[in-house]
Amino acid sequence: MSLSHVPGLNPSEMKLVTKVVTKWCHKHHISPYSDQGKAVMAVTTERVLAGERSSVILAEAIRSHMAIRRYQQPWE
Image (cartoon, rainbow, N blue to C red; front, side, top):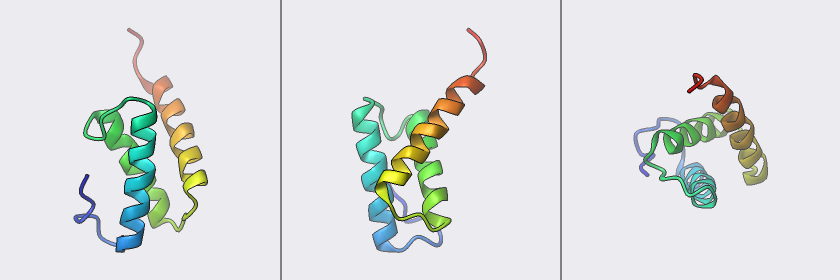
């Protein structure tokens, strides 16, 4: 995971995003490079850029976002 292309993130914020995303992906057996992993990275980065610094709150934001995203998928 490379966050060097994300403007506005300082090194400690990059480390926080990487830690939270890696932990979530490992827990859910998802590759951080998959579509789901990229969605998790995007929502986490967005929240950190908005000023969130708590890994607990970031994890909850991911959980909430991914639950909503699941319902946005078309019926199979």
